[in-house]
Image (cartoon, rainbow, N blue to C red):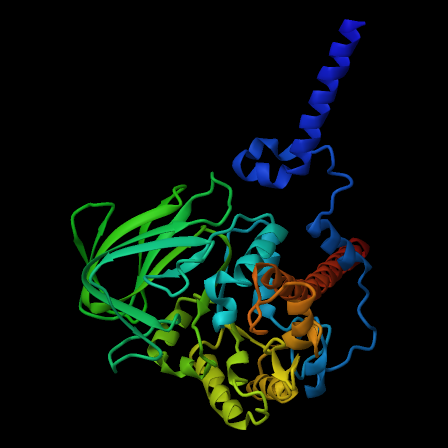
Length: 466
């Protein structure tokens, strides 16, 4: 009898451990890859990738496809490519890269995500980065990290510590020779140290490349891991030095750059999806005109970015009754055209502003000018011929921010900024829209493959008859 109890006890303990490992398999796999195939719950668990493939198989494009007119900007959940067939991908370069990544090819898909304090601290982008890399079974990395940042004390995906004398220039305080980077900052210093730790959860066996990025000047002197200083030329507006490539997630470097602008460090895998968060507090996007054409052109020559995203708007509604955004339309249109001209092979995407609320007569409501702002943002995208995503409608439209604050606890009491949970929710909406766009390319690719196979069979038959 006692022997039977021991058997039951041991069996129960083994089953509890087995189920626990299965339940937390995705987290355990990050640190112990050999546990990948130990999952009792695999057949009943939710798999985003399998679900996406299932949706793709069930998706039947309209026989009579429609062209996306300007009015299409009001659609939710869809990236709109204006004046193009609705079954065509709005972001062809991006979706082609995703196709290569799914096929296991060692390529990088790099995205520059511009925004204001809504994405500060890597909010939204940290979740989207994780979702995209998980979807394609890739390991993630944090991407670009500036020398200094107002969000470095609360950013969860990276830790940066600097010491020594550093002078900074930015969108709001700069000189004619500031050489601002995409982040809106550049840094100079006679001798300073930068320590960076990439905290993105990843496969610990995959190496991380740590690149020091800097601009045009005389020379840049660096000492990596307490080695002696070595001088590097700074002849271009965009230069990069590979500090190291290892499984170590941290790097330390001393820099001497009194006349050469230093931008920061990029931590990235040799292949995969990289999203660089370029947040700058309190701006509307028109400040991007201060970035030099020379820098953008050199980034384009290197094919550095596959996609550039503009996510602005809430700072334009600083007055509860503001409804006039024509001046913004004109200035932001100029910014987009500037980027497009300098970077002709890059995809671009304009996001509308999210919902935000004001207190009208003692009650919090959606800003009265938000429809006008979204219209103008869509018009910028339409007139500059770049795709548009209506974030405002996709997250729920009128009254959503009040619901996010009062009911769901997805945003702060300022009725503007999402918290961690809210940012993740919004990132998921964007992720779904990007996957829908990718599915269009996938369907098109399968059709092309089927046609090529049919043509090959037909030619073989003709040859055999001859």
